[in-house]
Image 1 (cartoon, rainbow, N blue to C red):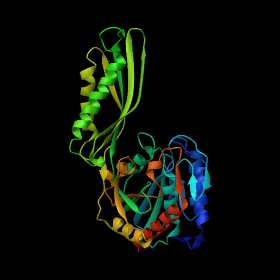
Image 2 (cartoon, rainbow, N blue to C red):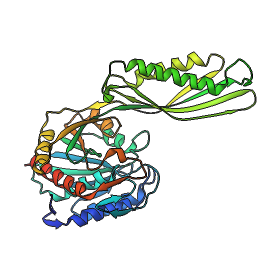
Image 3 (spheres, one colour):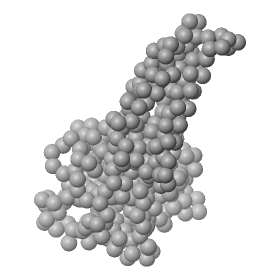
Image 4 (cartoon, one colour):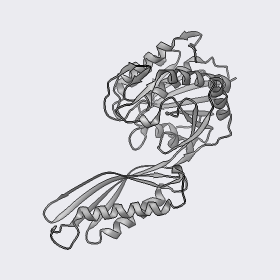
Length: 367
């Protein structure tokens, strides 16, 4: 099992790394409300040898070293909405963000504080804002800056012995139909029924695309998030919000006109519009890189059997990966099936083991 981690020549007890995570969990930080949590992490980084500051959009940035080569550890500090009680029981630490993704973020920060840097390297920890909402403002800001890191690790739950190499893309859209109202005793369709017909056609289209696509990562997956209808006595208005999880071979801008055409096919007696409120393309990183190789070795050093995984969600890897084009993976403790759930929790032994793996990985990478 991992021991204590050396922090800038000192020792940071396992209990101290757990306290960092517990304290950060105790500060609610849903998207757009990250300020208090950002301030706490800023102080922690400053007290542990980092030059710490907030960048132009409020991302927390901590830098150590002045070398020309950079390892960037990118997590996010915002969480899914909803406060949960923070407590520890039977080795599990409960709380909103324990898995997604304050657990991985604190593991990144703890490991970055633990390594001695040569004159050739610097390490940067970034806690991005607004990852959980369309637009990923923090990551897009980073991607807009000049330069790129030599290596990047995205802090997301992969499990302590797994490395995530890719994520599906997403198209998030709102559809609005304004249709003549009909009496339910008549022969015409009610506006809500027409909207449901559109969604059924969308689902049928996706089913056709997915013929002979067995792996979920390569399937086009639609989700109807919400539907609401109203009327003014003459027209019925139906609003739907949907997302489409995109495989690597289907771009969001290629799917968008298909969705619009299907809207047109049902709204023949009224008007319609489609508003895209978020899009990111699928991204798959390279497997044979120095970054992957040191991760594999570090996991084996902790008596693990490393595995690769490609994920069906979307993360900041989708934003920065295509821009930076550097070796990049996602890694972090936690079971992603607990993301956004009332039972979100992380096992502290896994958290500590992941810190040991990240610390070993960094030491191997920057020798």
